[in-house]
Amino acid sequence: MVSMRGPFPSAPANRNGRPTPRPLPDESQAPAGAVEHRDSGFDRQLARLYGDSLFGPWLDPGQYLAATRTTRRHGAPFRRLAVLVLVLCVGAAVGWIVRAGLSRRAGEDREHVARSLASFLREGELDRAAQFLALLRGPNAALDAHDPHLDLIIRGESALYRYQDADPARLGRIKPYLSSVATAPAFGQRILASLAVESRQERAARLAELELLRPTFDRDPEFHYLVATALEHKGEVKAARQAWDRAFELGPLWLAHRYEQAWFESRQGKPEAVSKLVGRIVRVAPDSAWAGLASQRFAGARAAETDVSPAASSARPAPVVALYHQHFALALAQARAGDPVAARRSLGQAIAAVNGQAPFVFDAFDWLVEAKAIGLARDLTGFEDWPRHSELAAARVQRLAEPERRPDENPPAASESKSKPKKQLKKPGRGKAKARRRK
Image (cartoon, rainbow, N blue to C red):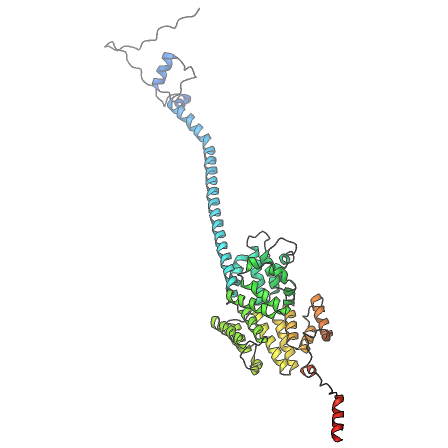
């Protein structure tokens, strides 16, 4: 049987009949466990009335706070990890945005450099073109086959090589891309670059290929220069002059082209055209080496040719191609003056100025043959820089060995060209007439 709990013990009553409150236990005299739990009187009264909680013993506020503090202490590392991950994600996003912005800005700057380079090449300002080409190409010497501006870079390198510095390193950078032009699709820029670095004879052999590019590059001054030099080598003077005039109209600042055009008109006996071209060079670039060279080379008086000197003063550094033309003009003047030793020395300086590059050597040979300086041309074939393992070089040596088979390049002397007077044949009737008169 279940025994019923007896009534709660009543508190002792005082003399007024009221219960006397029990004194609270002294914490200093309580056991250690009691002090640690620090149960409140309210909790003890609830425990007496209702017993323990359905969910376990009642906890005092101190124990509850200690339990929640432990829970918070265990969750703090996870919150720190979450904050760290969030900070890293935000930093990565900010970095990506900054890099994308910088990349886009770099691409825009490179596009601006490319447009400036194309403009300077079109105008013929090769000094400025060299600066922007270095910016566009970057510090790496090797070219990137996937560069969107590769054709423009190749075109700039070829122009600076042929008309400015004759640097073999420039030719070495672009040569792998020029050698595949014949097998690749139609790369107009690369075809023009490959023609620019060749000699005039090689351009003349590819004149048909050059004419196919006319619809695309009809307003390109270098295109018309290449056509003019090819036609000039083939002896088509009238068509070459038209191409020269078109190149002059489109690119008057191409000083190297204007000098060669003035030389072409000088060989054709057109002093008015020479004076116009020289005046143009002096007017647009009076301090350039080309202006000083043109003024001295085409001064008009034949005696002035001996005054052409490579040491001519110039406010700007002379491009090595200009020095090549200066030394070559001096060699021609010395050969005409009857000084073959000095002429050979000046010719050697001209070839050395362009680092012995084959296109310049071949053009010098052709000009010497055209000027009837056969002895100096023969000396050129004996130079150390003469490209002996070239079919073009072997063909030129063969031309010197058989001059009589090319009367157009080696015409006979003026004394040999005169026809001998024919013997007068007596008419048979004249003697009989005289005999009749005597009779």
